[in-house]
Image (cartoon, rainbow, N blue to C red; front, side):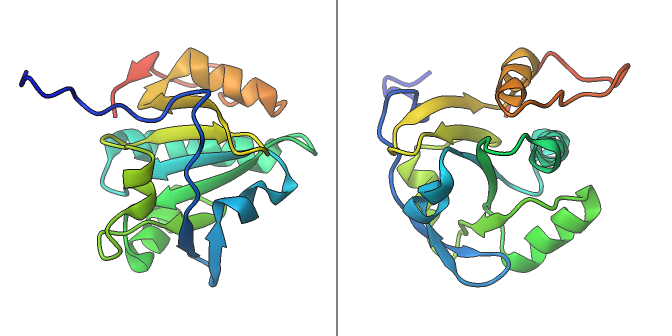
Length: 165
């Protein structure tokens, strides 16, 4: 490993950087917009990432079954609109998605210091990061889902304990 310290994603307790991104379904959104109703889970992903292909359907399951008043969930795609639409169709993703593309210089991904996807951030209404995770950790994912009143995995569903992003 080089002498330079590898960059780590932002962690719990740090301030969540604001951003303004295009919505996949038209318009623009800022972090402040997303937090207007309370906590928001930001899920950064790329369509070509196998761990994202596994994780996003579980997040969508939480999104569609979450208890009223629990946190909102937003995907943040590092792909263009067409590729993101194709990904959503292939994996049945219904949750709202914002675009953080190469063309725009990945402003949100860079602000959150992301070097691997999926990267997840639960941001509180006041703008502080309350929880973050890179990759997929089953027990952490279950704890997150419990906050939304959801069991994310079906009985007997094969779910790995851990997958690096």
